[in-house]
Image (tube, rainbow, N blue to C red; front, top):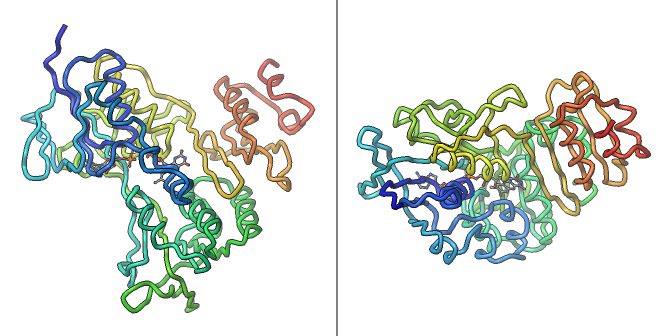
Length: 408
Ligand SMILES: Cc1cc2nc3c(=O)[nH]c(=O)nc-3n(C[C@H](O)[C@H](O)[C@H](O)COP(=O)(O)OP(=O)(O)OC[C@H]3O[C@@H](n4cnc5c(N)ncnc54)[C@H](O)[C@@H]3O)c2cc1C
């Protein structure tokens, strides 16, 4: 049976790509149009600060779907196409140049953009941000072995960048305004572990400080830190967080609050408009609150939920958040958003760079962080999902298998 409806998706990246593919996987036969501002097919961002920055992968290999697969699925991808407004009354998306595309249903997967550093010299050539493939290619081009790279921000992007640029032969200097690394995301002990780990790998880290200005004659030559210290550097990468691209939704009158407000089916305050990924502020029953996640798994799975909801195949999106990061030879993984825990249990040996720390609230796992131990973390996730009561003594005891705790 033919379907003459058109479903439009604004934002041709991970979440948007999954919306489009889910529509097809679920049998939608109408028109699917994916609008993307960037010049590339939907690509994976995690390699941007890792393998792609190291130069180990090609641009094409980061694509979620090659052009042939998108053609085969009859997904129309319009690249270099920015949506500028949503006319909800006419049910049209306005694109740059004032063309309009009519939609029956619309998904907004516009992700997030970098927060800019409002200091003198931030516009100098040599000062970079890291969000897009273009950013990675530009940084790679500018990296000089043996020179100093200044990293502003000791969060995930900053630390991954510090590790990768060190591997490329740079001296990486990280400045972080707060008193510990990744303070928004992880617990103080893991921040401290990360600090020692990076120092041990030759990264220079300065906490409780910031860059006051960048200086140079036509290009970046030095960073002046708060307090006056000058650090000569040839490049700087700023990683101080992102801002959700929710303006297009807010201007169209949709509810927004740190992102586009959606329900557990990725529905916005307009029944014909959906949102998913980094831009979506959603409720999570397991955590008992709303949140906006900036993670790979969320972009994929919430995109799938949105695609199904557009076809009225509503499926509640409630997953335990999961995130990973790779830095030097360490794979860090995190489940949940640990907060207000009353006990912790560590399994493994932090000194050997292989352990998991569990955070418990009333005897139940509330979150966990693993360093080079994804297996125990996976079992921890199952314990968390099952809401199982476990003791610190059992969790910390390497002689008791995690599987046994699930059965117990
Ligand atoms: C360098 C880097 C490393 C990362 N590493 C990890 C990791 O190790 N582990 C992990 O879990 N997560 C990681 N992430 C996070 C993960 O990649 C993101 O959560 C994910 O990309 C979000 O996908 P998204 O589709 O929601 O948004 P985005 O990827 O931000 O995509 C949104 C797209 O919409 C486009 N767009 C915006 N506005 C418009 C408009 N008006 N018209 C048309 N197009 C528009 C944008 O150009 C962009 O292409 C990393 C992110 C970065 C940047």
